[in-house]
Amino acid sequence: MLASIVPTWFLIASAPVLPPFGFLMLISWRQLRPGVLPVWAGLPLGLVDDLYSGQPMGSAILLWSIACVVLDIIETRLPWRNFATEWLVASGLISAYIVFSLALANITGASTHLLVVVPQIVVSVLLFPLVGRIVAALDRFRLTPIVEIG
Image 1 (cartoon, rainbow, N blue to C red):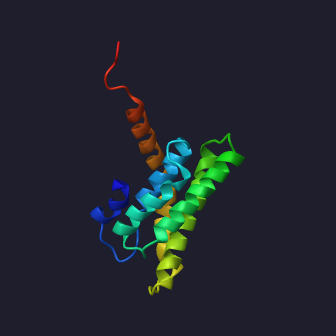
Image 2: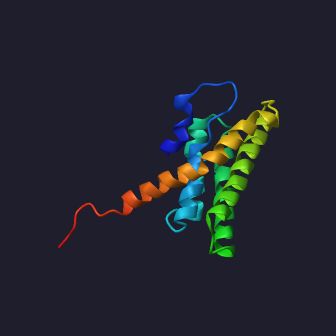
Image 3: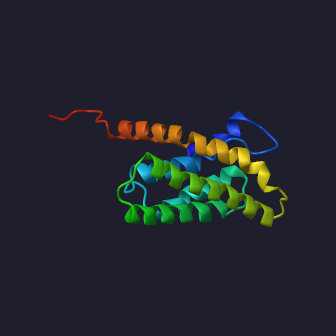
């Protein structure tokens, strides 16, 4: 949930530049540990993102839920994946998420061209491996025993 708030802290710009860190974290968690987050996790996490991102209410709920379902389908179809496959799937989901977020914002009254979000798509796709490493480090920290019993 904190990752959805981060893009609003660092930079104020007239065009979106920072990637949607909350969505990148969701994709990374679902790819690293598919069983940790259930398929319906996109709904409450998307709600938190909708509250902080400024997008029309329900857009992240819809898009994050669809992304979770797509990742679940890909998980069942491709049980053996490598880095290139996961990056390709993530880049497709990231690009689709940003483009459909723009489309939903344009439906509600904004008038922004698709070329405005191209830098955000490029930065998001290039930063995805770094976010994946951060998620892996958080997962290792989560699985580290704090107190050894016995």
